[in-house]
Image (tube, rainbow, N blue to C red):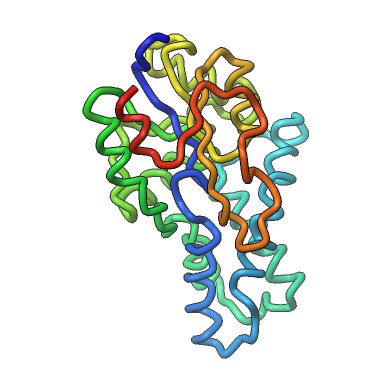
Amino acid sequence: MIKPKAFMFDVFGTIVDWREGVATVAKRFFNQKNIKQNPYAFADSWRAKYQPAMQRIRSGNRGFVALDTLHRENLNLVLAELDLSDEFNEQEKQSLNRAWEQLPPWTDCVAGLTAIKQNAIIAPCSNGSIALMTRLARFGNLPWDCILGAEIAQTYKPNPDAYLKSVAALGLSPHEIVMVAAHNDDLVAASNCGLKTAFIPRQKEHGEDQTIDLEPTGDWDYIIKTINELSTL
């Protein structure tokens, strides 16, 4: 097999624990305001609106906007559903929306990415915006070489352009790049675009009762338990 020249990574769930990060920020706000709301359930409700919001763009029913905008719109919806809209002023809502810039990396990620970077390019191929990915990298010390993904492509995964335009931005061919993700559907789309694939299970991404992506469901090129395993390819 050809030695990979670059690795592109899904981020939310694969590299960072979005559920813990969002819940941590939300809990801080709820405690300040004495709001009796489960912060993990709040994070789950917010995340549940993620795919439907992006699908309106993927389907052509809405022009491209950055994920930061979709997150804020979805936050407004969740707060309204929970009858909490009036509990937060505009500045507080903006601050709460930045929870997505404060997500902790899984414990194997920083060292693993640093090791891979010694021999290959590493970059996110995420639905997050360049601004979001940059601030998240600074928060979690993620040593990316560059930021790729949705904003480069002006569309969201799993649209093929999200992968192919990211590949083109590196001046490489799809078969020279490994797409790394904890989500089987992400790897299906990447593989269909000609990329090599690596699956890493994150069995608590959705909490203790997770039922999806517990194991690989495709014939992926690599199945790993830690990011560092990719550094020896």
